[in-house]
Length: 553
Image (tube, rainbow, N blue to C red; front, top):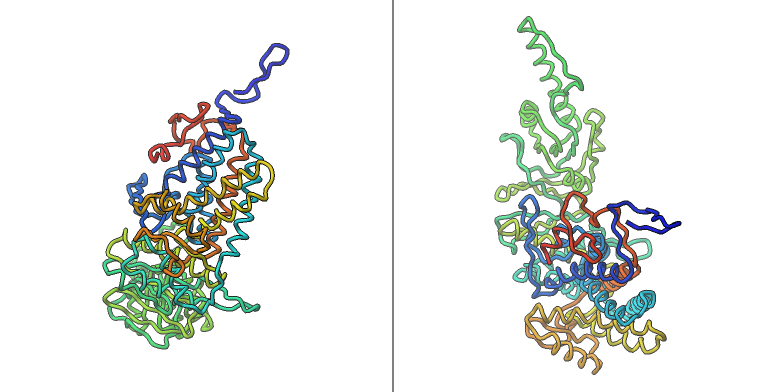
């Protein structure tokens, strides 16, 4: 409740349930919440990062070290913490990888900003300094980055391997990386200006359990994980006309409930005959269209199945909507919503084959632009984590092919950026200089955490890295497996420049957004989930980090 004295009487301007935290308390509260999120994921960074087990309210278990997945699955109940989660989501959308780096650097920026606030440096000066450092860092990244030939398959494959390392794919990462590069090549086209454009919408990702990861495969076309609706149907069709149907091949039902009194068995037979004729007419229309294969999103009546089998037509029911939409691109067909109005032009053309061992249909079109990456693994948890890692690698390869710039990994880029930002800070006047130096210190969190997660001494590692960069080795990074400082670019640890630029920009903007807040006013409990009654212990009596974050800390 907020009050002002007016003529000796308090004037109420906020409700009794409202809460307010101002100035230093508000800054402390926000920085603590943001740092808690960052510290929750930093142990997952790098090839030696650890995994998190996340159990939701329904008992479903997710095991992963993917930063954005961890933050999305956690039951976070704090407005500031959710702002930091947006950093990870933005990084995932824009770059596909580097989510943990972006969030960890955000937390470190706020930690160093807190030290500057303790020295009575105004938040405005810190915000300006962080912004200047961010802009300079982007320029330096562009200068450090190496231009690559997008036809250099080996180097692009290394970016995929770097992205997947530490995500449960080490044993088969060479095989998977090659599949990813081949898949991206298949869906890459040139625009009017001659630039490479990767259209990942034409790449379908499917998973299957019970097989080894090394048996994952790339298929030119789509797959349908269904069985034929009738045992007497063919299971394969070459040069087939394919109908994609989003309408049930069943007896049409009325929109209202009706009751019919039947006094004569012949009347009942007429009803049955009428229903049979409806189904026969639907099948006859499919035959007249010339369809050899029918993929139906909805149901197919038992009698219709019999008629289709007699006509030698392969039919599949309850196909996923996403599968039909993808197949429409593969076989160049329209998804038909009204069978009666369908024409032969709506049909697609391609080959349909059956894999009886995996119980899958493979559908390949003529000059198909769409491809399917079939990921296999022993269990659901293995396949789920594999899918997350491959998704990140696909985005990374797509960015590399489109952008054409790469950087050395293993903390090499961050150490070089920190060194250059410290030189840049000497040219900055005023208190902003301290903020630029703090920004440089924050970037060095990445090699420090990489060393910590590998069981190495982070201070010794950072000293060795700085020494190597002072000697002019711009690409000197940490080999987390041997503990040595080496040229990570030559060692095959390669990252896309765009992802690094996005991580630095997102971290700086998120930190500035948090620092700019000096007053928090809540209409009730400071929580994004109003369902609970728990009271927190944040500064100023405000709600704490919520049940999810409280359990995490």
